[in-house]
Image (cartoon, rainbow, N blue to C red; front, side, top):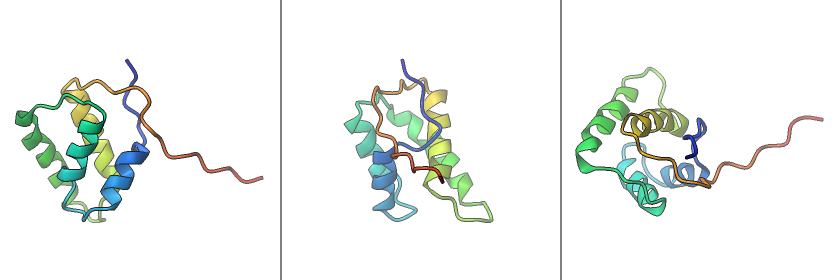
Length: 95
């Protein structure tokens, strides 16, 4: 079983970029369905609370901040990471 990546999966990042900051649930549900994740409805209020805490930060949270909370939540509920999550292509380093 692969581990959940620390970096936000590329396809989820794209989905979240296409939505308003407060509208994270719809793209997350679509992403979870696409990857066959087994997420139970009673778990969602906990995720909502975790992401709402981000809004209390002085700086506006970005998608990587949201992913860190989503990742913690997935791990806390023993949701298995699917194989082959698309990751952002690595940027070439200097030189």
